[in-house]
Amino acid sequence: MLNRTTYHVIRKISLVLIPLLLLASSSSVFASLDDRASTVISQERSPLQNVAYGKSYTLETPYPLDKHFSLMEQKYADDGGRQLTDGVFGGLDYNDTAYVGRLRQAARIVTLDLGHGASIEQIKLSLLQDSGSGIYFPSYMDVSLSVNGQDWEQMERVTNQLPNTDKVKRKQVLTVSGKDTVAKYVKIVLPVEVFIFIDEIEVSGRNDMQGRVLVPSLVPEKPQLNYPAKGAPQVGGIHNEVLIFTGEWKYNPSDWISFTKEDFEPYVTYVTYGADHTERVQDFMFDGFVFLPYDSLNDGTGYMPSARKPTSKQHFELFLNRLFREDKELGALNEAVKEAKRALPEKPYEAKVVLTIPHPRPDQNDFGDVDGDGISENLNPEQVGEAEALRNRYKVMKWYIDETLARWEQRGYSDLKLVSFYWHNESIPSFLAGNDQELLKLTGEYIRSKGLTLQWIPFYFASGWDNWKEYGFDAAFMQPNYMFGADAQTDRLDTIAQAARSAGMGVEIELEDKILENEALRQRYYAYLSKGAEHGYMHSVGVYYQQVKTLMKAARSVDPIQREVYDRTYQYMKGIYKP
Image (cartoon, rainbow, N blue to C red; front, side, top):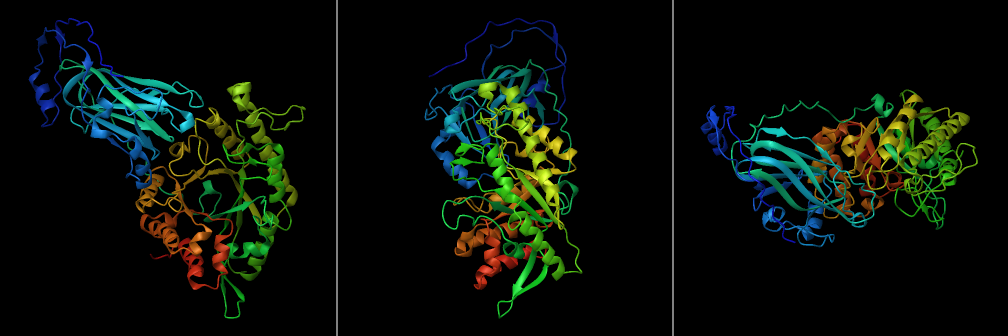
């Protein structure tokens, strides 16, 4: 529907002292400002109107554009580069051609060129939310104004006031005051969770130069962050860690997603094989082992936050029962480490363990009784309210952590050190639960009170990735997901390297069984290693995702091409890899 801003009553002003700000610029805007002498002026103001109507703008990502996601955005493209300033508003159907849709990639930056200076009163952004289609309101909108496109004054941030957990399709207009500031350029920054859909940008202002003179904001100097250092305290002293899955399997062999002492051997130590296939221990390899549950359970439940039916107390205990078996998982790792130390007595080594905290899903209303009061914990905020759901979810977290530590103490592993917990949910989305952020802060504080740390490995630009410290994590590592995106180019690894470093995060290395047979996928894996050497994250804490036992298969393969995957990984871990 076509909607144009109406004219407001013209207000009179007289005898207003206009201070002249002398700024060094050759732009026409500053020339106009120079013409405004510091004298008393009495004249009428121009009428308020949408000074952005029909104007051009840029719509960019904060990092290089990702080909995979840009292809998916083409269905909701910005035809002609003026679709957001054409005065046309969309309805509740995201297929309405008034909308411009953008997908992931951290955020979007809209920069409007008004063509000339104007006194800006308000900036309005119209958006759609359709949670069933993955379209969400941004958590906030930042607006800055400029007269030359280089020096910016930050306006007050406006935050989203409507819950992203809402299942109803909604529209919202975010509004920021322009404080009657003279500017030519308007910049809008919006974080993106999954999809963001915008149909219109309006700038209410006057085509005159009588507004407030813009004062560029002081930009605080950003701290020089880096990838987490190997052996750093926040990662419990770990240098290189590998993800180890355990879980049920509905086919035979039903217990193949588990690790024996023999399975662990090529992870604890770097091994080679002679002509007689005899295993020879050469060096230590991984010193960190992150134990995770395989998501899907045979009863139809799942540990991940939105897949299958929600897990309960019995499923959390099932995961712990698998972890603390004598001949598998932790018990098997302890024996493998003992054997490795006997083989390499002159080399110092400590095996460190990270245990996963399954996600206490907010769609669970019957988790089970964790405090002995005979009442099953209801974690669903829609049924008990946000405050009560948060209390119950935190109660579950404390119970699980205490139960894990009690079992660890009871086992008394001679050659393992528990250093950290791992948060299983790979994003902190506002659309699943409004209290996840507060739950994380409480959980992190409780873990640190036990002398341990909390880790996180979010997927590619997942919700909350750049606020990981604020949410209570001690260390975080970004998944590039380059291995699994057929359209993704190697520049994604460059982008993640840049983004992770700027946020003080590490970069996860990803591999799957298919790389042993598929040359193209194998080269994708080697690209992770080459980019790590190029950008420097090779010398930071290494985190390795594998498809259950990929590296073990590579280590024991008689195919030299497959075996090379294992050898190159070892070289990379030791910082001697050369592309």
